[in-house]
Image 1 (tube, rainbow, N blue to C red):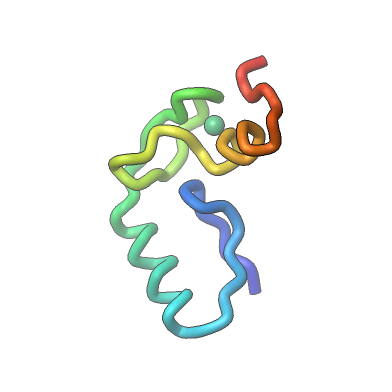
Image 2 (image 1 turned 90 degrees about the horizontal axis):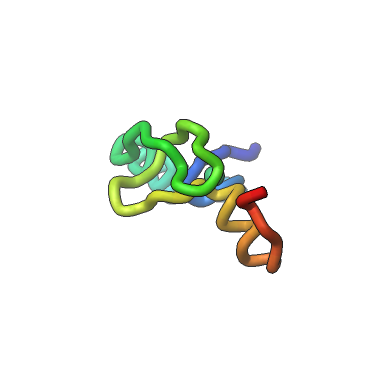
Length: 65
Ligand SMILES: [Zn+2]
């Protein structure tokens, strides 16, 4: 089963620990606008970019277009 989270993207949940981590992250996350794509996403307070944009950056792409 896969879980999706705007902070870390898709998770593969393999243990109860992963499930706990997922829900703990969701609880701590707040709705904010991604600083790149402008979508409203649920992110941890110290994050300002969604997983999708970070992945594009990591792959050398340009998420700003
Ligand atoms: Zn984004």
